Each structure stands twice: as structure tokens, then as C-alpha cells.
Image (cartoon, rainbow, N blue to C red; front, side, top):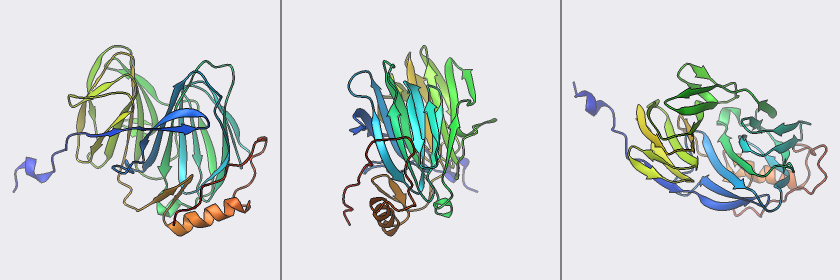
Length: 297
């Protein structure tokens, strides 16, 4: 029999990914994935860190479509009004999650609300596995999530299961999303599932992962085969932990679509442009529909 240490590959050092600056509805964002070096972390396929923004125009994102994914908004400061083609209308406040399961197709809008000094959020996409890519669209709002304090850190379980705790958020493949907030310096070892791949990114402050420093908007990709990670948070730091079982399926991301083939995406874009009933109007929103760039293939 081989020695125990040879039976399982040793975890590699964290892979460093710098977020790229982008723009959403007039608000600056830091986009961590997808990048050429890393397109997926489990089923997570998109991570935008919005703000913190305290000046300039209010974010206003007009009607736009989605297929084949879930959009996941974790609100930290300010308020955003969500509307969609199912008739949903929901204000999201700090500490809450909005989750759209686009499935076969949905359209929605996002409007930051006036009267708030700051806008701060994480917006993510979760790729649906092929077996569920055409599920019926739905919208869910989560105001109450599992929260606890350990080792001087406030934890919020956003999605998935963490030890004995389970988030109510709907999901379609093995996944985890966890928010960690430190008020003072904090050091802990986080237990991990070796069958999951993980990423950690400071949304505020900074951290050390296995002794390596990572600043705000720098993602540490941990990969597979880890049973724990050593994490040190500076005072007043907030870190987002994302993970899940590797999707194991090739996906294509174009504009606001996630597809399992280019043909799926091309068909959806043509239907959006033709105002096909697949993407109904968004009741209550008076602005213009967003138009996609030309497909490059």
C-alpha cells in the first residue's frame, strides 16, 4: 500500500487573479471571473464586485435577458430595485440576497435607489448544468440567511451547506458561498471539502491565505484536494468564499447569456432582438431595452 501522503495530491499554492476594472450601469466594478486564466470556480462563472461607490450617477440597468444561469446579488450597502419579466418587483437591502434562476429565459432590470450615500454589492452568476439549463425561470429573495460568529469573524452562509448549516438559496449543483467579516485581526483554519474547488476574495480590507497576502479585489484560487486553508483577516475586512464541485461541462458565456453551445446563444440573442415572447417585457420599467453587441462567430 502506498503511504497516505501519496494517495492524494497535495494542494497547490494559491493562484493569484487580479480583478479587471469594468462598468455596470455607470458604476465602476471589479470583475474577478471570468478571466482567461480562470473561467469557473465550481459552477460560479462570474464575479463582479460593485463599489463601494458614493458619487456619480445612480446605477440603472435597463431590460436585458439571461439564459442558462442563476444571477446572485449579495447586497452590502445601498438598495437596488429588481424587476423582471415574471412580474417580480423586489427591493434588496444590505444583508439580503436576490437570486434569479433564468433557465429557459428571463429579462430583468436593476435600479439603485436614491437617498443612500453608498452602493456596495457582489453580483455573481452560477452556470446551470446542462440537465437544468432550460428549467422554468423563477425569482427568489432571501432576507434571512444563516449567520454566526466564530474566532472573531461574523459569518453569513449565502448558498449551499457549511458543516451543519444550510442556506435556503435554491441551487442545482454542489456549491458554497460564504461571507466572512472581521472587526479586529482574526486567524483561523477553515475546513474545506477536497472535492470542491475554492476561491477567496477580499471585498474590503485584505487577507493572508496560507501566509500569502491578498489585497482587495485580488482573488486567491485554491483548486481541489484541500481539507483546510489557513486564513488571516486584517481588521475591518470582508472576504467572499466561493466554491463547488467542478462543473465538468463546457460552457460559453456571451453578453448576458450562458450556453452549452454557441448555437443556443445565437438563438437566444436573435430572439431577444426580435422581441420574441421567450423574453417578455418587464412591467413597470420605462427605459429602453439593452441591445447586445454582434456575435463574433
